[in-house]
Length: 198
Length: 178
Image 1 (cartoon, rainbow over the protein chains, first blue to last red):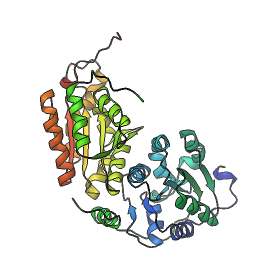
Image 2 (image 1 turned 45 degrees about the vertical axis):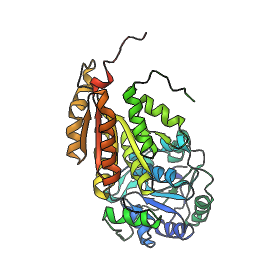
Image 3 (image 1 turned 30 degrees about the vertical axis):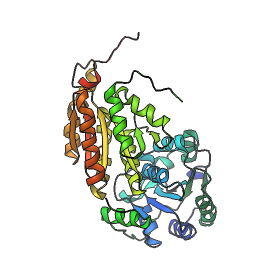
Image 4 (image 1 turned 120 degrees about the vertical axis):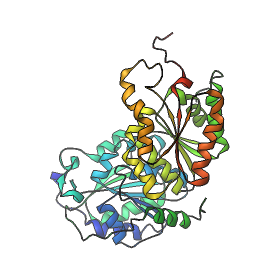
């Protein structure tokens, strides 16, 4: 499926809110920008790790976390631009196939944070085909808010690496800014896992 | 599974022994000949996950994610890879993650390939510009102590440390295949 064939798109805030509500055990990593705002807008959680920079690093950070916590579901929620910058990480993830890792790319086909310039995913790149080509067999796209239930089922099941491209409206919901204090969110996250400071 | 050759230099064995004794659970890498023993040993070790990367900056994020989840991870790369990591190093400073990387050097000693020189000669400065402490080893007998010192600073004190493994240590690269 590509952007031009779409007749409907998911509401990003509502889909993310439903997804998080249905995955209470998930360790969530967000890419910077709108994806972080969507996750924070649905309610702050100790087990959320928000990136405010390190563009391209969300899925790799999720991989290290998923390998370290194999018994917990890890959910990366990012945008098309952030994923594209770290696109090779999908090959790295495919090589390890962590069963507890789900990647959700909120794809509006644009760089939303910088003025809505078109991104590659609305200029010809098919991210599902890319993910499959890298070796993530369970890769698919959705275009409805109701698809949150199917995504959540996969997160909770921890039965295999999954890549989900969510076609969303290219709108700009009101910003909801998560904490920017990196050590605070790191220490809070680790404490929620019962990990002690060094 | 690849057998571990008995010919691995003692200094490479010393590197792996430090990582193993330090409880490392993940070793992320872009390969280099100087890391070959550690990579083979990681693949063979059931308690260590080896993560082959497409580019080195992925490893900065993998190591941070591992720490977030309670594990120790290290990044192995060649000096050229340091340049690929520069913006991703922001993650280490912004969230104050411990970080330990081993960097095999090119472009500094009997270098045959001029394309290795620009990044090789900027490697230490690039690391220091991004707030990473640099230690260096040139002699095989120093490897165990210096790698261990850097490792402890990272995981006992939360430091961000790179140990440069000098090109002199690795030796002249053979360009003719035997």
